[in-house]
Length: 49
Image (cartoon, rainbow, N blue to C red; front, side, top):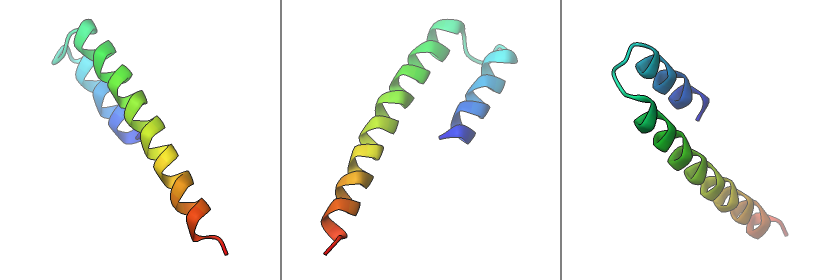
């Protein structure tokens, strides 16, 4: 996730994406991160004896 954020920031700094697109992308990335974290937590919870 950090790498994706890093490359998104580079794209924004080089004006390949505008501020609105960058902001929306980061919001969506945060949602994905929360979902992945919950999924990982659920897998770890189910795998414990």
